[in-house]
Length: 319
Image (cartoon, rainbow, N blue to C red; front, top):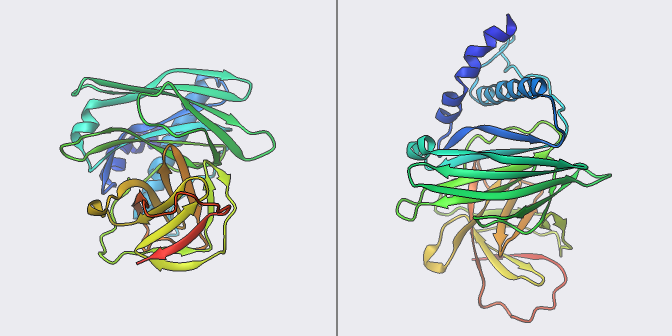
């Protein structure tokens, strides 16, 4: 009886999840690849659990599901072992993308704690088929995962070390005329991993500043030695990375100054791509006001000294 009662809610999930998003449309459901080759019956049960958790997570934020005491109902956490999740979004709420794009796996290989997934994204309206392969491997004695991409028809980063629940955003396609983008979010972990509620967006405020408070940098998942733990806010932030150069970050596009969309900031963390490397910064406080996930724009500073003997990552304000 409980399962039957839940079915109408589960069937309504796709429409609920997409209508709750303000800046993008999710393509289908979250797709999961488990490190272990689980029986079909167990996979079906886990799929129902995941879909129910998605709608509860979305409804909790809107107050749509509450208990007798008036508080949002939250299911007990479920531990399902290490797994990779794939979530595809069309930016700018493109119904056309949602109706024409199909994503999935063409194969999954499991060997000794490592799972290799062959992914595809097919656009039936535009007759395109994009593919890539990604391997996930749990690092023994840690809560870390090594993620390696190969055979890619899209831009992919160099090998990464991800913490439990962290994700990588891959740009599958960009419509040069409309600016619409198709993004696939790839994450890995062992605990409960919540689906995204939306895609990134620009900060509206003209005077928006990045708040940097005791930054701790990582590159490709590896912690980097940092200089003084500074605290400041600025519309443009300089990040000096040994061996990579000086990068300027902003919430604003600043296209006339050569800035390009390079990453995102959410709560107290930001990340941006630099030549196939993913640079992450974790701060002691929020980087942006508000609860959204915001675009980060970046450009390499051509005025920086080409010969830089610095050995630590430093941060500074540029006004």
